[in-house]
Amino acid sequence: MQFEENVPLAAYSNLKIGGPARYFKVIRNKKELIESLYLAEEMDLRVFVLGGGTNILWSDRGYDGLVLKPEMDFIVRNGNELTVGAAVPMKDIVGFSVKAGLAGLDWAGGLPGTLGGAIFGNAGCFGGEMKDSVAEVESVDLKSAESKRRNNQECGFGYRDSVFKSGGISEIIVQATLRLEEGNADDLTRRVADEEKYREEHQPLDKPNIGSFFKNVRVEGLPRVQVDPYRHTLKTDPFPVIPAAYLINEAGLKGAACGGAVVSSKHPNFLVNNGGATTADFIALIEQVKKEVKSRTGIELEEEVRVIK
Ligand SMILES: Cc1cc2nc3c(=O)[nH]c(=O)nc-3n(C[C@H](O)[C@H](O)[C@H](O)COP(=O)(O)OP(=O)(O)OC[C@H]3O[C@@H](n4cnc5c(N)ncnc54)[C@H](O)[C@@H]3O)c2cc1C
Image (cartoon, rainbow, N blue to C red):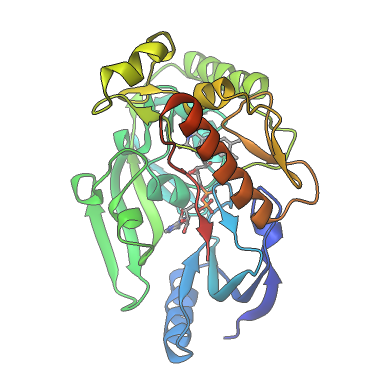
């Protein structure tokens, strides 16, 4: 067993930027995973788990440890349940389920990334979230190499959160069982196609990006004087929020740029790589957006995406 060395991570981010991983290993099964974890322990390496790279902003200096890339990619159907490997793209799981007339994931049309990443961040959109379908998750502790099984409750799902995320990347999700319901394949297929079309029309999918950079702003807890000007823009996400895109637009930031990092004019909560951007460009642009939104609207935006250091 050997790790690859100095592997450029730009190829493993949808944003197409980032320095090299000191060590890198593709994991095809549990045996390879356990061996890699023992070797990482021996070499005293910290470990990062990579999914589809659709929500990752690598540092320009790269990652000075071991990046593990799971490639467990199977879907097994048992009645209304699917047991799925962590590396399976959500697109394939959604496609498989709607074709089989199974409802429950049809909110996820066009959601990029893998099952592992979607569970880690409790991905959601169009009124649905991963937590609505997850029956059980199997993971392996990155330190002890012990397997764990958790039911839905034990996954601690919250808004774009789970026990895996709040635990600070200490486990690797290897597979999960999703519990779905009988539905109509034609209706489900139509819904997914509509969502994909919506994304194409509203998101800058032609430029390297990693989705929304800022969290939508939760209304609860904000003073009325801050919410009232934006009442007409409120969305449910799954609780009432002011869309970050609206605030960024209000601050006149569409098209704002730092080097190759640009605020998309199509969807201002997407910061895109317009060519040749560095992570430093993105960090500078994030700061500029936060500062100008705060001075213009009084509201503090919080990043949804963080640099992996
Ligand atoms: C165009 C676009 C649109 C998007 N729209 C949405 C949206 O509507 N809703 C939404 O919620 N998100 C959205 N995203 C963000 C992103 O797609 C999701 O967060 C996705 O679930 C990330 O999955 P991934 O496999 O790419 O994870 P990665 O980006 O590779 O990793 C994200 C995090 O998950 C962890 N992780 C990944 N796999 C595992 C695993 N097997 N075990 C443990 N940890 C793991 C990583 O360590 C990392 O911390 C969008 C992104 C893009 C580019």
